[in-house]
Length: 391
Image (cartoon, rainbow, N blue to C red):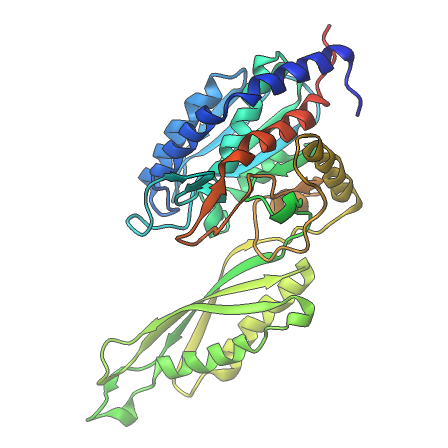
């Protein structure tokens, strides 16, 4: 898409303004990372929102804060220009419980801390690009909108419906999750489903009345063995029982046990079949006098690569290269994201546009600070080419 000479001059001005803003971006990132925002830490998540909301409201955007029910609040924003929008996606929550990993520190070019890479750095990049476009007088002429949610790390159970409704009719969607090796753009992700299974048995004294008991842990262990065997690497299907708990004491036949299961799949059809097999297994392995109750949790659809998303990745990749980065497409990604939701809704979607870094979801999470400005510059270039010509 070619820009007019006036828009090209404004783009040059936006990039020049952005070039000297690294210290400001680092300070904002440090403030965001220093505030714990584990998904279940509703107060902490909202304090991150308190930092971000005024940054958005300084810009010529319509900003709406949607109160969360079980999680933190969500931020929606929209520009002034009419037309099918470029929809910007992000999340404010992290996987780190309070006290497990705290603080922000800079070591050379690395910024270390919980959520620095996943994905508070992506939020900073988005804000920096919007501010640069505003400084150059372009922001009001670009059809754009966005949503930052607070429950992404648990599958966005509350915000998926908000995302689908607010992104409807968008021209494309861009996700600013953690950047990939070589700045490769994500066009395909596995779908993710969560399942909980509860084993119900009969309690009894392990010494005096063992034969009267019905061991819920044993029943659920049989179930775990069955569903783990549904993993099929050749077809991209994985089943992971990540938590298992049950019983009250070693000398009591346990009447209850519970496990949490993560499912990954490449197509919606594969996902539904896998869920059905997980449910069927509960009926086939229960011991006499026990039962296993399976409950479906949140389901995030897979991001399926399409010709439209491939073209979008090519266009955005060219903007990255112009900004001193690399381009190309990432191979299939196992983790889900909210860009999968927009992709499933038929909106051309790409992801992984955040800064470079490594170690997301670990105590070694880190971001390459020098990548923030180039990543923001790529978004500036992409959006500027969609600006309406001035009157």
